[in-house]
Image (cartoon, rainbow, N blue to C red; front, side):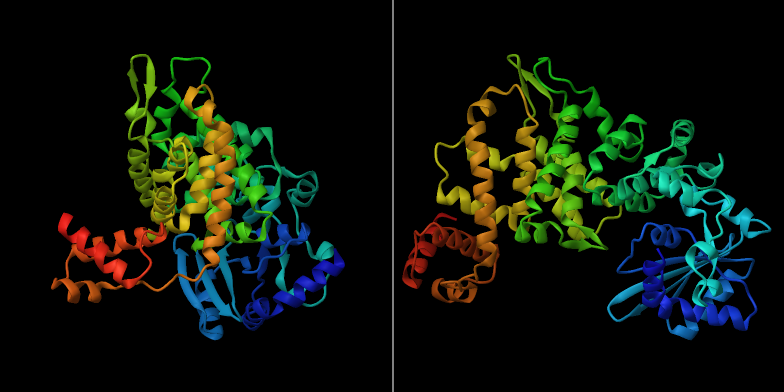
Length: 484
């Protein structure tokens, strides 16, 4: 611990020292609390660290002055409770420093109002910056260090969820991130107070949810959220999926199938993630630190959300015609509710909408160049995500005669298409044989949607080797324009 802690101080001194210097000038005792100390005890470090501080009073003014001195960003988080944030960008990393007033008369009372024991520890900042060891400096009135060793998530007090209902989600996200067990008394409080989550903003819930998705073992946590009826508070759309059961007992109901698909998606992400190229693709940040793999897990959870409203029985056969289109629309609405970015929303909708397409390819007697081209064209950058979800979906489906017949073919086709996609990514796109100006000049046309249609069809014809030269392109364009 001493070696790790010494290195931690060395790495973070530049971020912490200005706050201590200001505290010393103002003769204030400034305490570092919460997650940073938990991470030190676990010997974990962050690329973009965040630090929580508390002081007896005046936190907002303190943070405002510090922000001015270090030329950082400043924002008031909670005027009523005296909480503010300072953000400083330096050498490619972002450091976040949050300051809050004591919630109580003493430090011990302040720690009592925090969420879990593992986050209810403190050190006097001056002590650790002036050479005191971590163990000697640690203030731990509620047994947080012991619970870290036990890998246990335990409440500091019974009213913790009343103070901030988001802590219900945080219990699950901490369990996901650190692999800790949630104490049975915490579960008891979750059962009693879960409905308080309705008062929490979706942005805050989203952030905890994506921490769960970031875990390689998120399935167990999602299953826990489902068991305690929290998922349906976040996603009311899922309730109908639980009621939607096919008449055959040989098939999973829609919700059980969805959970199994989520589990298999997570398993495939772990497996394919071992490949450097596919792993890099899945780890790509889409927006605000959220990665493609995490959004793919959300897509797995929502891929059949359109089934309940499209359920039909036709001559004893279960049908869900159009569920992928409705599902994409519902997934888009959920993305907006969670305040996901436009790019994340497009990704989610595209993956949900196209998750059946690889299955259609597998049902064909042969994979034609045209069908292959159109799949990659329509799925774009999300082809890899669509293929992984499709494979997970197939492995989670039972009792469908057609799928049972093509299952072996499906299992061979998807990995092959995945390989093709990542080979294709390395290729430098060939210059067009003709462009829009060429088409307008040759056929005396004005700018219109027709030009885009012609170029799109020419791109397809070239991909399937039906045209190879500029002359071929003009001849094909003539036919397309005549038939438009």
